[in-house]
Amino acid sequence: MHSHTKYLTMKVPRRMDFVNITSEVEKAVAESGVREGLCLVNAMHITASVFINDDEPGLHEDYQRWLEWLAPFDPSPERYHHNRTGEDNGDAHHKRQVMGREVVVAITGGKLDFGPWEQIFYGEFDGRRPKRVLIKVIGE
Image 1 (cartoon, helix red, strand yellow):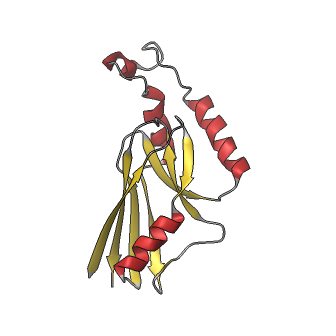
Image 2: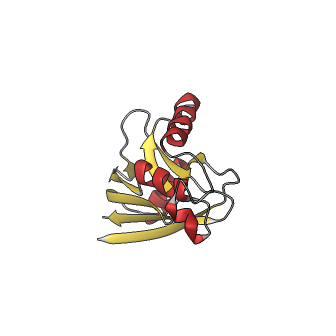
């Protein structure tokens, strides 16, 4: 069993945005030399997400509107008790919970084994500061 670890640093200027990181994950898989195995991609911050879906701008706009409807940005401590700590990102924690923390993708023949249209995205819900993404490749 072989493993390879790589970290990405994300600096997203908008409070909420989605970044396609598929090519960076593919590079990490190639660097690993793993031909058969698994690739874990994990948002290492509690107000960010990693998810798989289609790279279609209308879908991303729909996600942003839907997430804002579910958990609207509101820096006041009335809506989110978390904001009583001095933070203003209670909504971001909820958005991350909905969109998920990580994904695992099979590696077959040295490549990510995706279904049609699947891509890997980093979801940012409290931007404006650097955050890390872990890519962990394991296999043979």
